[in-house]
Amino acid sequence: MDGLYALRYRRVVLAILLIVLPIFALILAGWLSGRTGVLGAPAAREINRFVVWLALPALLFDIIAHVRWSEIWRPGFVAATAAGMALIFALTVLIRGCEPHHVADGAVDGLNAAYPNNGFMGFPIGLAVLGRESLPLITVSVLLTICLLFAIAIVIIEASLHRGKGGRAILAQVGGALVRNPLLVAPVLGAVTALSGVVIPQPVEAFLKLLGGATSPCALVSIGLFLAHQRGVGGRIDGRAVALLVGLKLVVQPAVTGVVAGPLLGLPHPVVVAAVLLAALPTGTGPYMVAEYYGREGATTSRVILISTILSIVTIPLWLSLWL
Image (cartoon, rainbow, N blue to C red; front, side):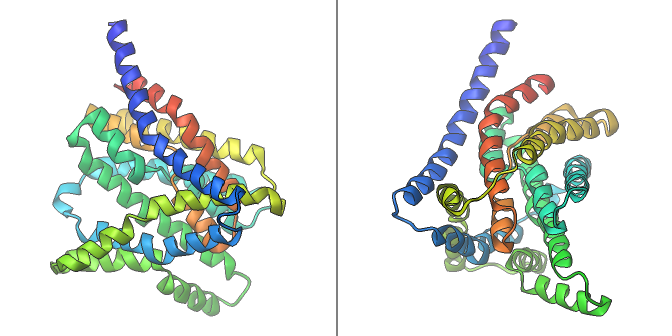
């Protein structure tokens, strides 16, 4: 039995290593490009602008427009996953809000602690560990992350940036900013498309796939560039903040999600394992896109993504060993 457990553990570790290696390679490519002068300091921000304004909206629209709502209607899983995300996000905003930080920075930190890399890592790891039965659950997790969690953080950031004005002025400015924000407009248009039953023409499909496929690679290269040029601009990293956010992401979020999914809701065991696995994933690139877009917490965010991804090679198998 111990031999079988060790074999399964090694198989999971190997699968995770094979999945995260391209992530590190893309970050390294960006870092080398920055350190060798192939791409200058402004490149990180410009690449991120491309992701925020073009690539990620195409990806969000494409995902939502093709959702089959009957397949992803999993209320128990939604409740457990959303509870884990919401609690960690709110707890982080409260903790960071007690420090001399802008509320907008607290919202970015909330994303750092609660935003799993379920799109880039969730599907391959889920297939390797749980099989094709996990795909609808992973899709639900992706939708909750990039639509609900993203939207809440952006609303908080916009409201924070416009505070100090009259009530009507705040509502008008925040509302206008949200309507113009591509990360909110794209999923709304995708939902309208899905609900209306409109068939997307094949050339448009190909365009969305090509453009959306650039999201993760460009974001990871941008992170590498940011890390390469950060020393030159005197960026200061708050080590305690990074440790706190990584701990919340890799330890507290999967623990909370597992308790809600298992003892509290009594979901089937495979669903509980899927919920814990997805909650245990490291921080995705979404928080970095938001941080760079709004000019907040870029140094902390890039470190959290990098360190949480490295440590997840150890922590994900440990969580699976507790729940499998």
